[in-house]
Every structure is written in C-alpha cells, then in structure tokens.
Length: 366
Ligand SMILES: [Zn+2]
Image (tube, rainbow, N blue to C red; front, side, top):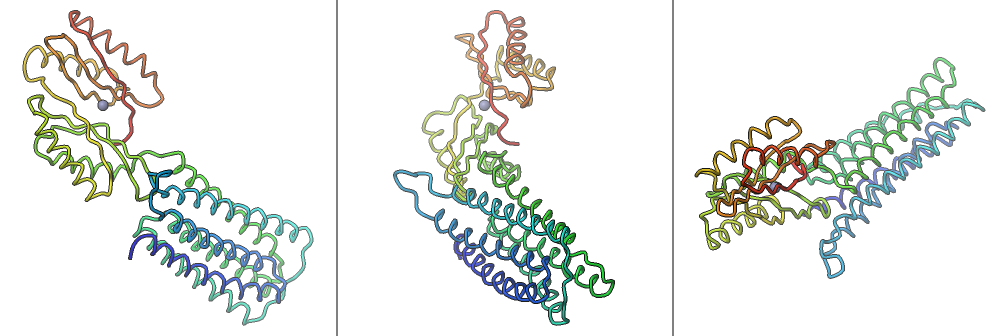
C-alpha cells in the first residue's frame, strides 16, 4: 500500500478509536461530575480532530505537481503538523482554565465501579493504539503519525492520572480532581509546544539528516572515477519529494563524454535508491604535478592552523594562468570572511606570483 493511503487509513482508525473513547469518557465524566475525566474526553476529541486534519493533509499533499506548483504539494504536510500542534496547545489552555476553576470551587465527584472500569479499559486501549500508530509512522516516515502516536501514549498516562484521582477520592476522601486536571493540562500544553517547535523547524528547513547524507555520499563515492564528493545539499518539498545537488571530484583528464556518462549514472542511481533528484557538479583535480602539489599542501597546512576551517575542497591550480581556485567550509557562527582573507593573505605571501580565488561554501550536511 502506498504511503499516503497508509497515513489515511491509520488516521481514520484514529478518529474511530478516539470518538468511542470520547463517548464513554463523556458519559462517565458527566455522570460522576468529574472535571478531570471530562477534560480527558476533550483531549481525545482534539486527537480525533488532529486525525481528520492529517487525512485532509495527506489527500492535499498527494496531489500531482502542476504548472503553478511544479515541486508538488508535499509541504502541505508540514503545515498540517503546525495546525495540529496549535489545536493541541489550545486544548491544553482550555483544560488549564477549567482545572483552575475546579481548584477554586471544588465539588466532589462520585464514581461507580463500572465507571472506573471504563477508564481503566480506555487507558489500555489508548496506550496500545498509540504504540501501533507510532510504529506505522516510523515505517512510512510520516512525522504526523509518529507525533499523534506519541501523543496517544501520553494521553494514556493522563487517563491513568484521572483513574488515580478517582481512587484517591474514593478511598482517602481527598478531592484532588482540580490538581490532577491542572497537571493534565500542563502535559497537554507541553506536548503542544514540542509539536509546534518540531513542525516549525521543518517549515524553516533543518540540517540534512546525517544518516541519509552519509548513505548518499557513500553511494556516489562508489562510482569509478569519483575521487570524493562534497557540498551535498538536500531540499525538501515534502517528506518524499527531495531535490538536491552534490559536487564530485574527478581527474581533469576526463572528457565531456565520460563526465556525461558518469554524472548521469550517479543521478539515476541516487533517484532509484533514495528518491532524490540530484544535480551533479564537477571539480577537476590536477595536483599531482609541481607546483600544484606543493601549493595544495601549503594551503592544507594553513587551513589546519584555523580550527574554524572545517574543510577545504575543490582545489584546482591553473599553472598557465597562475590562478588557484578552492572552496572553504567555515563553521557557522564565525567570521567567515575574515578567515577567508587571512588564508588568502598567507597564500599570497607564500606564492606572490599566483592569484587565489576561494569560494565560501555553507556547511549544509555532515
Ligand atoms: Zn564546494
């Protein structure tokens, strides 16, 4: 079954399970007069709503690319996660308000054995269901499902809290309903904030997943003729629509025909293996002869003096034009321009006849 169908089916199941829980908890909550249990039901209702929005998002984001949106609609999934986070947050704030009211004006709740049994069953159902949704989310790499699965498991704990509160009030005659409600509310708010931060992170654009970057680089390096690979970038237009680029280092004796074959083979394999549309750029390497070899080793020594310089690559020396090109990756949060000029200054002092032309690269991936 394809990814979006799995997400939709799991979410429909989520709506069903949560609505049944809402029904039973509402009945128990209203009959016993327990605000904690009513809030617990409201919490489950917001989960059902989240599932409904996840379905809508999966449907919208599965639409085919068109002229106006040639990168597809995959990023809708990120917006859906933001909306779900806001819903969870609002549910938490509403629950906190109710609970504070209950603390200020307490009224004792009355429970029957059947009611307690219903809550206990709800705890188990919600926990097992959360685990199931989470495992499916991991399998199809859907953040929305992983998040709602984790949320469901939290909710099981929350329900366990209401059960504990009920038992305390029955056996110890302490009315701690309002306080338990408040703890529940704070937990809901906390998970809402966490969901929101994660959702916004993906919208802003985060560092490439190190594992995926490593695998792609390894695959590219395995091609004959590729010396090394640099500057891997991956842009996400949704969880499954990824467009990127990479530079490969090759001998400067390769001709256009060979390069055409090589870059095409790399792009084809990276797409079939990882689903990534990759553009491959070329760095020629010619530092086996003098003076290129000694210029390169001098440059490497100078770069080693600056811990901020993470990498030097793309070295190419045009001996006829006395022109040296290279790329520097300088750590984020440092004065890259200053470090670049220091390196160039030192190189000029060592080789006054040469012109040095570096490019500052960004530290996109590990
Ligand atoms: Zn570069």
